[in-house]
Image (spheres, rainbow, N blue to C red):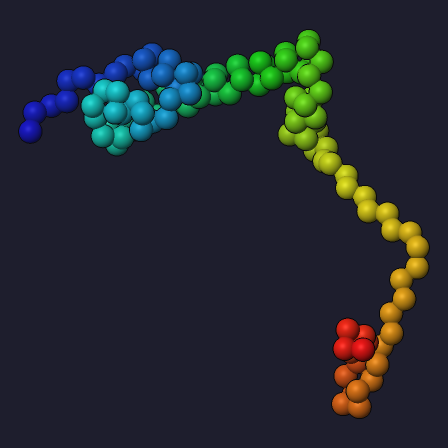
Length: 114
């Protein structure tokens, strides 16, 4: 088997990662096994980090400039640890009858048989 001649260089791998391509996608693009991209790990990680930064900046811009409430809530949850607070309020009175059937075990009264 001959040497692989169509391997990309660091810049190409970084640019592909900046576009959100996975390592598997980059390997398929160049017709090589994923393992052949191991030497481009740093370039891939740099590109992926730049893509994340751009995505985060885009989200912030949309949230702040366009006053996108949904995006503001999402970013607050992700970066500020905010969460939806669900509160259940119950009012009124709840009556329950408990009947001892003689075996020492308490069971709720079931009036469906009456």
